[in-house]
Image (cartoon, rainbow, N blue to C red):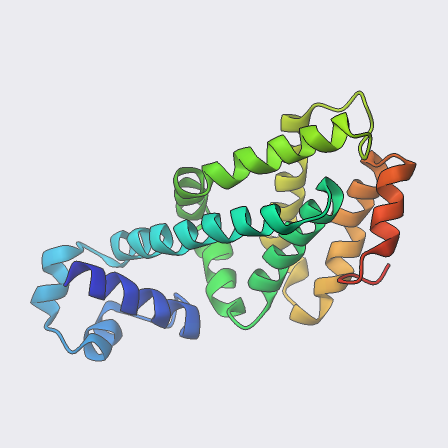
Length: 199
């Protein structure tokens, strides 16, 4: 029952946003009593935490698969952040908007627990890019990752960037400017050839 509540609630949060879905609405969708809901979850945030755990475990797997299929470190990193932007500003934008604006600490905590494997892979990928001369030789991979993460967070959690239509512009004016700046000429050639973003 607990797993069913988590899976169904996650689908409802993704479809309608977190703020609009109260525990009462979820109880109706699930066809269970309020007592049953409270047997498993003391409040909406406790339920959301488990929903995010399920969601980000899937994301961790998805990122790992994406990194496997990329031809080089630059293309892989652009793919990961482009896909992330697509999620944040795409069909489930209400979910991500609510998450970024009303539950950022919870999101950070669950991501740290559930996506740490993918984060480590991205750091290794950045190091590979440095070793293979796609990125500047003096760079430190963990610091590059932290910088990319901080830039991404500033875009997704800043009220200036609420418009979904700005997605490509956001990528070009933040992540891509930074990525271009850390690339060697070899890395810049990869960026110029990428089709998923028009620069």
